[in-house]
Image (cartoon, rainbow, N blue to C red; front, top):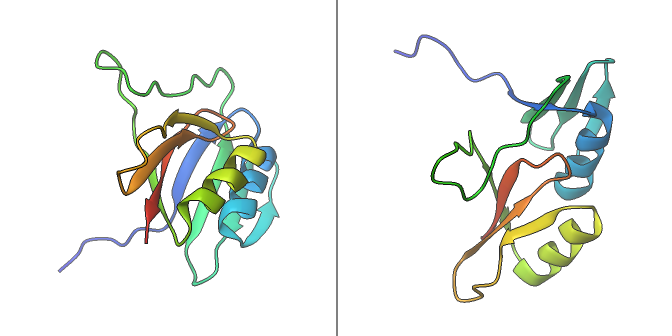
Length: 119
């Protein structure tokens, strides 16, 4: 028997509205702005939340001497189209050169790593 259920994944960032907007363009959903805290309600009932964190320092990837903290795996149907879209929205490629793999690594505009994964 589980003791709890996962409510929401929360990303610290310098600008919650901007980062929620980035992920809303990538994943769809509805942004609910509550000031220092912004929720992104995703289709299917899932959610991501974004909280303002003064002094935020983005994770380093790859860095054997620093933790990446976490990353999101986003499943896509068309890797090239998804890559083009996230880059246009302000993502940065971190490790997307190897086209033979089924994933590519990027950083969102606040620096959090995420992967586009073939679905």
